[in-house]
Image (cartoon, rainbow, N blue to C red; front, side):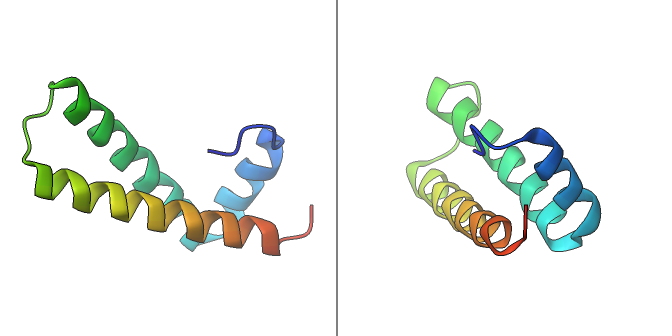
Length: 72
């Protein structure tokens, strides 16, 4: 998600900002579930998959806003 960004910056935000940490972990969890569902490993219906994708996108957008607002 933060390709090209220094991992140290991401790690620092995870440690310093509880909201960022929670969103980051949730995004990773959703990313794995969406991938598993698309591969057929996780059997879920299309409605739930769509909801998970929207939540994942919302988390990503919020993470990027937090990241962009912090000095680095």
